[in-house]
Every structure is written in structure tokens, then in C-alpha cells.
Amino acid sequence: MVKVKLWGSLRQFADDQEWVDVDASNFKELLDQLSHLYPALRPKIERGVSLAVDGVIYRNAWFTQISDENEIVLMPYMVGG
Image (cartoon, rainbow, N blue to C red; front, side, top):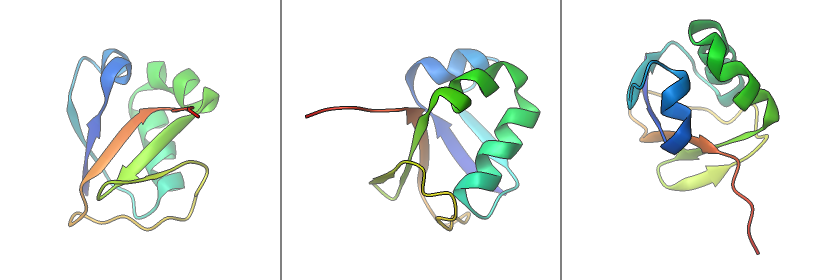
């Protein structure tokens, strides 16, 4: 199980929880499990989210490995320039 921090507006779609536990070993499994556990979160995930693992932000890196030793933060897709 990995502990995931839901950032900002994503919390409201997961029963207002800041932290959730998910059984996943990579980014895709994490998203699949979150969609299953919190169906209201699915549209946000499908629109796009970013994953921060130990401070490094990933998007569409489906097979990025994660473990319970990582600091994991899921956030709405971030754009910038």
C-alpha cells in the first residue's frame, strides 16, 4: 500500500480526504485504483493529473514505479510556461 496525498481540488472527489491508501506499484495502477475506489475522481483523472514522486513531477509516465517509501502527491494537471 502506498500513501497518496491528494492535492487541492482533487480532495473533494475523494470524500474530502487529504491522504488515501492505495494498493499500487506504478502510476497507472495508482490511477486505476483511485478511479475504482473514488468514482467521482475518475473524470478528473481522465482529464489529466500529475504525479509527484519525491518531488519530481510526472505526467503520462504510466509505469513510473512507486512504493510505500516514496512521498507521493497526486495533483490536477499542471501547465505552465
